[in-house]
Length: 300
Image (cartoon, rainbow, N blue to C red; front, side):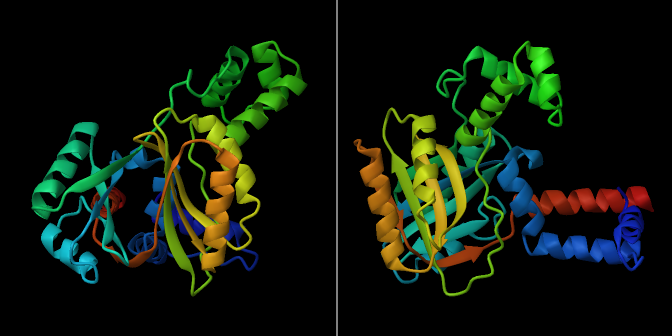
């Protein structure tokens, strides 16, 4: 929709009947883009909307206190590496972008070359488990196919199309919601709390059952009194990568104890407390700006 069209629509929806000019709408959109709001929301929903693949690369930096600045200098102005997170002990995570699977691999290899003697420890990639691994049975698959055709399809329409009862359809819809099948869990709570502790968790085992872990983790999350889960990714190598913020070290210990005691299996549990995060220009900014410029040309 052109900017002026959005401004006119706002006039229709506004209680006082006031809208915005096209330029005013564009200014607000640009501000949201500059602040990372739009791409952060859409990217977490589906990173491939922008034609971008992403992964996290973890390694240990020898210069502990100046790690983030050192890595930022080594990488230089490169939009493929939009975020550098360093912990108090020199642990470092770099967010890596690529425009395809092969390009993402090249981005990782280029990062390896830029870092020189620093060895990469772990490459964490988004992962979508295959249907058989998520244990999706045929009736559930039918419901998913209906939703893929039309996400707004009513329970009764799905029941008729799949030859099921409405009760069965509701059951499978609940399964889709609980198991997060084919989707990432997203927390849209506004981050308006100051003085919070950021922590990255990585839980893994070779033959992890994603559905089982997801069910357990959702139960554990009910005990997170003050925590906000910022990111919850199924990743390769097999595991779960979780970014969250909380108000106390005690709560982080409580979260770790809950996860380890609930899983009761041989999981590897790793956590990192970022001391400094550097946000850099990234490919998504470039792509969005290109699209906005094209849109301006079309409107003009």
